[in-house]
Image 1 (cartoon, rainbow, N blue to C red):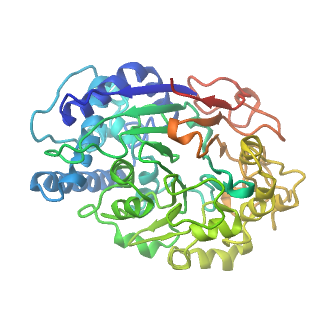
Image 2: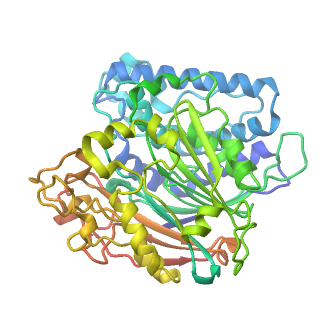
Image 3: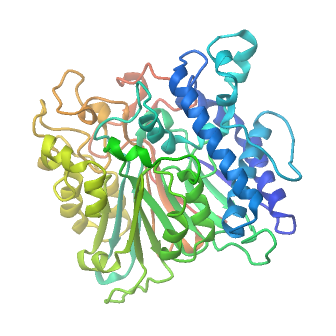
Length: 515
């Protein structure tokens, strides 16, 4: 992990603070930003692999969306919400200006070109013109914010080779009440491409006002989150907030093409921005859900868990209201409910990329997948659902939680077996996947179970005792307790670009404290 702390001074205007926060972050992390961009995004929409039709559609969509947001910013309605949107966009502008070596603080209204070089004329992008090359190698941070949203926009706008793989997991999460309810542990594993393992744990102290003319400070002015170079939010997602909330998600996606019709660039705010606004403004789980569900973009469709440590009392037997709020989003539909009672009844809440709410499950195309592929796509009988149900009983403290979240015992665990796979044991079917260990010449019913350079890439956990001081325990890199550690040079992934990465990933968990 790299660590980054950005603190701004409340005696300056919010706009200046936001722009300066972006400026400072890029100034100290520009090398990491460059390497992360090269590893994960270079060549996206040009100029060398230019999918002109899709990229043109994407550019139009993002332009229309920015234009609509600029209209809202100019209206002066709903000042709290749009003030936070404006500040996030200003922070992004500061990040981009700093990276590109310029200082251009906007005094009034400002316009953002949509996401870096996507705003260049399409005909130029199609040509590898020498004077364009430096421009292309400058990462537009705006495109880096789009990771999760982009995955769904690719499907909705018919990209010919979308990055989303059928059945691919994207994170595991576990909330666990310790015996006697003495603590509530909140843990999260990111599952993603191994090329994205240049990581930063960030602490933002941004004492913004709730609205432009107001005096009160936002509840979520201090945020600690696992993140990446060049992104101003988590993306995993995992946040510890000064409001007393811990917010995290696992991706549920959308497998029903008929629902893409609900995507509209006008009237929606992309998920990464709604997530920032909710984290800043909310004081409770229901408030967070109310802010986040507005302007649903139908992109980066996740199951969010909002844990309110203000409502949690260690040792209390009966479930207090509001400890756990669960929200699920798909195109055209958002559902949220208090799930504290179920958390206390089961002693845990697990999340593993499948929707909990039946209406969301059915509407997002999962019934068809169950019919076609069986239990693997069901909420109760998915391999991780069963592993969590069996192994959460072994969690009695922080160390045992870390062990469970870093576990992958696929060769010996009967629950890691896959019907229709040859060989039957599959490294995707674990709490922290290691899909690089699946044989390249095996037989697999759907693509997620194949050999891929993809899996669990980290682990974060906090508790009611650590969260008030923004403490956490974090491990970086693929799991290696029960399986060989990941080493680029001998892995099937060695040909992929991994600038700035160590070769061997054997990093123990670290205890993160902020002095």
